[in-house]
Length: 289
Image (tube, rainbow, N blue to C red):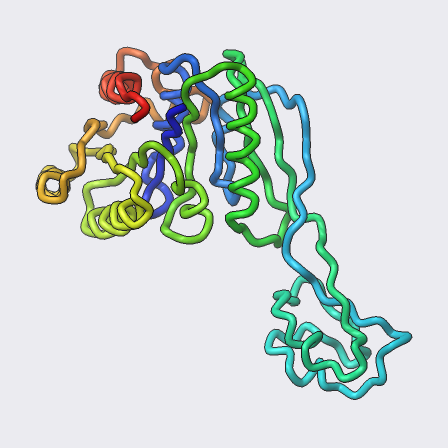
């Protein structure tokens, strides 16, 4: 099974717009949105939720009043100011570091694992399995929830006899990105022709290489700065990274977003659609090694 993750060195490069179009163009696949901080792919795919699972993560301290002696040690060692004068822990301020429990001489500090979010197992309007997740307000992202999304998507793909999983990955190079990339067949980085875009592209390519995942590149809005686009192409040639395509700036993409559609659905004859169709052909030609 080919697991293809679409990533970017930063947010706002057009990654989800590309993935939404690939969902329309590629058959025999499951979809996963691992950008759980901003799971926007569902806004375009209009999924039907078939199952919902709870996600628990992140320890929060609780001081047991019947065991607390009021010595104040926990409050002194808490660097986040999460413990009040009455020895009540603010769950929003608590970072779950465990210092209070470690230093409490009375053993009065306990830890709970609260509900942090939900994972949704769905079908898209096209009948493809689709899995995404949402964090509850104030909860932090981690690779655990990303792994849960990937695991559910893979189980659905295997049970349906599908040969591909297309993953909308989170931006950056942190823990959620690592959980999205590890063990995949290919990481496709979407970048923009700017100085920071080249820098962020290098970070994501180096991350993929560290985990021995092949990388490819899509240059979005490629015509807004031809010199920078040329620099990206040169970087890819120098580093042995395949360029899947260049997507020109197209106002129709914004219009498609406003209508809740992928650009290849909303304006199939637009320049951006033609470019993404070519990119989809690259992906469809990939074989599992």
